Image (cartoon, rainbow, N blue to C red):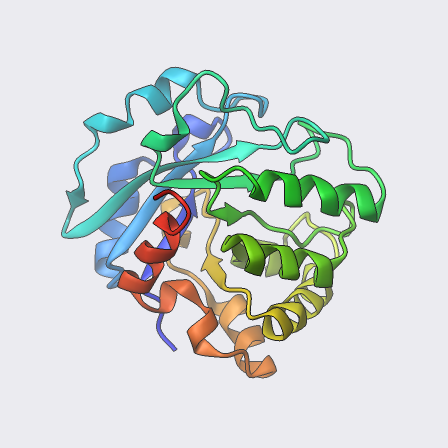
Length: 239
């Protein structure tokens, strides 16, 4: 299976990443990707992009090196009510809004509390992806999460970076098995992303694809296996 888009990567604007947008776009073009989405960390992340970074995304061309460029953000969940660090910008201007639970931005609670936080984030109609729901330090009820994602038509991310041997996230593979079982049961769609912090990782999905093949996960539930299907998913709740 070939994936045509990567909707989660970080440039030097995120403070702890090492490549420019131009480097990412060139690399994506060489690897045959049709679409990428720039999603630097929101301002609540220590060292994250300033709000002006997101205000000025409009200057980025729609295509670089024949690769379509979507403009987005990996927003930090900052409250147990699912609130995000997007209060000083207009999220309707973002093509991609990933909502992610990051330990520097919010202390996790119980499995029920953490699951409820992500579901509340899903209720924001501009959120179209839940980022890396895979870390045992932030325990989740994966069946309930998949059911809510299907009901809200939000994509659940399978984060290739989390599955690498050097990942700091804990027990991601086992957690993804449970999540994917829930996705099949409730017909929730996923998106496979690299979560690149250096341009050479863009479009690298090997660990995630190996797991999906091993589980026999249905291709029709993988949004970025087809660019047009992905783009429809990203706008499905925005009217």
